[in-house]
Image (cartoon, rainbow, N blue to C red; front, side, top):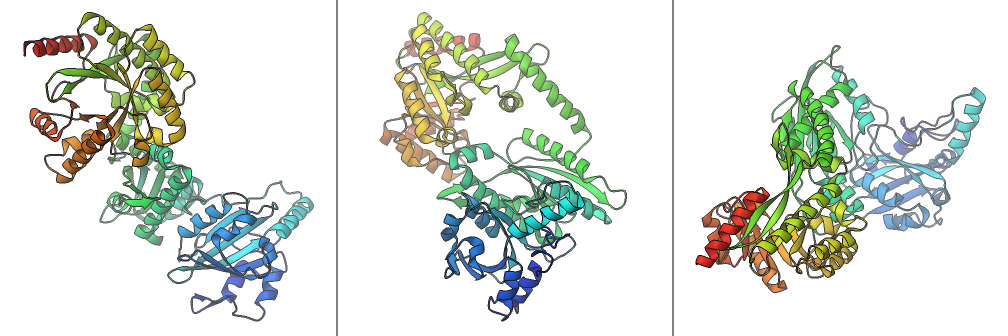
Amino acid sequence: MTDLNLFGWKMGGTTGKSGEAILKDAMENGRPNLDARPSLMAALKAADCLVWSYDLDQRLFEFRGDLRHLGLPLLWNRVFVDDLDPVFEAGECERLEAVLKSLDVRTGREEPGQDHVQCLLRLKDHRLVYFKGARSGRSHVVGTCTDLSRDLRLQRRERDDERQPQGLPLQDVNTDPLTGLNNRMGFLHSARTLLAREGDYDLVVADLNRFRRLNEALGHDRADMVLALLAGRLRDAFGDTAVLARLGEDEFAVLTQRGFPRVSERMRGALERSLSVAGFDIHPTFSMGAVSVEGGPAALDSAELLRRAEMAVEAARSKGAGGVASYKRDLESDGLTRLALESELRKAFVSGEIHAWFQPIINLDTGVITGFEALARWVHPVRGMIPPDHFLGAARDLGLMTDLGTIIMTASVRQLKKWLTAYDLPRGFFISVNLSAPEIERLNLIEDVSRLIRENGLPNGALKLEVTESDVMHDPAAAARVLEALRDAGAAIALDDFGTGFSSLSYLAKLPFDTLKVDRSFVLTMRDEASSEKIVRAILTLGRDLGLDVVAEGVEDKALADRLAALGCQMGQGYGFAKALKPQEAEAFLAASLKQSKAA
């Protein structure tokens, strides 16, 4: 066989120096010295290599060797990373820089190739080059770049001679290219090795909450940057003493010896600090699942250990953002319960078990009802009312959100028509319906809304559609077109959960909103946290300046309602007025409120 070994870092064909030997030649006293040996250029040529040094602060590469391996002019031995864009395929430079920023430096050598950063990249002329290196000093990385063209030809020739199966691994199958951590396969392998040693270990799997919304709001590139930064924090917190992995799109894992503080606490302390990306302040939260295991010859298989940890993560998610759960035998039956729930949920959509219930929205000055928000409820024939947080996640996972939206919107419009006919409703009375991201992108949404409004004779603005910040910020231009068309069709538009997303205020004036809804998290903490009241004041001022109505969610008692009214908030909703009501109960509440207003 040739000397090509992507994972053991030996390159250059049967007569060339290994990449590790070349890099050793280029190091003096732990610092990069690219002119260290007179014979360096000859060695580099024989190995099809360049030696490089990278300044993390300046984003500056310095190369030694034949620059034609990278398709660069001979005098371009010092270049900024952006200068490499013309010679690499699209996105490759960004991937290389992300790997360098999240450099994984390990001092042990038990696992070949695990102690250096590595990245396989494709040039525009379709050649493959392989970057590998290690940190040298505080802000420098030094390494080699190898042109794999000759080695690939040698490898193919030897495979033909030895009649070996076709196919060459062109990337480290154990490493996540974005973060440099182990991927799922790498984690299982490394965990198996670690658990062979005697000792008590903890595995914690952490799932980043609301990553889908973060991805839609920031875009994939910026969201990837968040993941790379989080991976770097994990490395800083655990170093070489743990097996670290990115298991999925937004899921990280740490396996290490049990100790104090607990692994979950160390992870939360490392990951849940705020970070700034492209001008946005991000406050990540994680749901964590933990499982303990004893190492040694009889240790639990790493795949089974990971399965148990991920079941615990599911249990943590059910507690809400930031939850933690440990694996217990009870979770095995819970997993089967989830499958049964999903099966019954599909049937519920067909058998008419999904209903619209209505929560009143009150004018805080007069105390008179001004509208309702329609909320989805599942009334099971045996289990009774199933809370929305028990089935909305399953509906999202099963792709049923557009069906759910259609059911709730149709029921709301019909109910509103009935009340308009039966009662002398206040001017501007409305029912608001939540519009999910899949619905915004749904074909025929505008035609369906226009038809419902027209066929039921609703006045303009009587049907109000609520969208969240992250749903519209995924593609503001496209969302603006859809929302403008919905408004032209006669619907009003509300921005829900305002203040919790990642939007830019510049878009608020451009998008066709009629109403801002203050997130309940700010309202509920107004009495105890001065910052929450300041945020509510700022939102109210913003609403007045833009000519928008403002609704406060989470109004739990009269004192909160009075305080909000004093601040100038027009409307409120919450348990202080009423929970979500069945249609008959909502009608009774409506009639009583209208009667009281006339008596006053």
